Length: 540
Image (cartoon, rainbow, N blue to C red):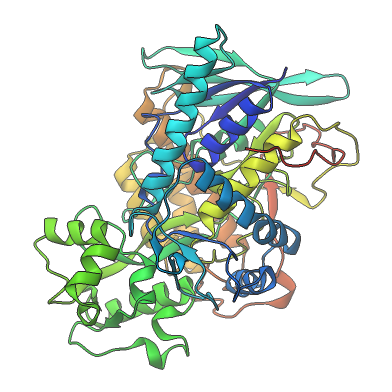
């Protein structure tokens, strides 16, 4: 029996925990907040899969590759799109009640999709419906094991990942557990044969984000410090339409899919002159276009006009957004609402293969924490929940595979020393100042001069000693490490591609259409070797 430590309780972490338990592994599931708190819970748009007769896996693959701006890993995209329908059916068996109409499951159209293939639950509460069903499934597994007198799955809430434990072994080194900070404020080590990171993204890096406050990139930062390869961290996707009120609640892409249009502050539509798909152009194009229009109008938000959809459709199809508008004193059935871009999803992260395996033995990464290559430089709308389900399932199937050489990642480079040292000279970083710096220098629009200034500023900041830090201090330290990584990667990519746009290099360069793998320069650890083919999928 393999001891598996799963860190994170979004879709990826919960699927991994359920699958690993059902496969006979002994699972410890830890999560920084409550079990139901994660980015998954806030996902509105839905989950995309080629489930319908007028759709195909090949069409979904083509749409994903096109949105990825030449940086997708075709093998990862094929895995995502081919295995996606089966994983959606798994979610249905786990209790997710997707919306239905007279023809069966309701499906919607979103930006850059050539077919209507996006499934929703509770209108715009898809993530919450998935999270609720999977939390219930995990709790049922834990209750069943307890009733039988076993501890095959143990759940620890309000427990934060501090760092990974890396141990020298015969001929290699491997991750053998993690240091955790428990709810009592003390750190303790947990041993494991395998650690599966499912800690989500790092939206808290930016002043404006659709992510909850817990999205502080803990898994990517810990993996980086442990010596794991990371890739494509310069590619952070900014959702075009967050409601421009305190809290920046998300206004789903599906609203534009239903026919809503973007207007200037004086009421003119502007997207048709920019892209043939207008409001349904890829996210990076819409986000930059909105930001440019906002600059023209002195920083004022643009307007999203959904009045033509009618009150009945808006309130039934988008109850979460309707409630957010109402809380802000807005009635979007009768007036356009103010929207602006906000940090939404990280395409980069811990580098993995198509089985969730990282460059360190014993360490797996699934969901937004991972860079599988399936999203490239710009994620296709509603592919994130799908990726989490597909690769979490595959990571569990890979647990029992035999490890053998050669190395998994050959194209690696070490970047300049980026880790924070509590003993180094420098100013103690403040999170709000860090967020402002990243928003201005490494946000929707970037330039070499701005990034260079940001790199100098970041080098002068330090975090507190992790051994004595609180949860908030640990999070801020993680954000500092990741801010340095993103700025360094954005400086190194001297082109514009997907979600990464530089004013001094406005065009894409064919010779740079490749991922950039890096790892911590202090690491001399050998890389994980390519295992044999894992088992077939286990049944629900």
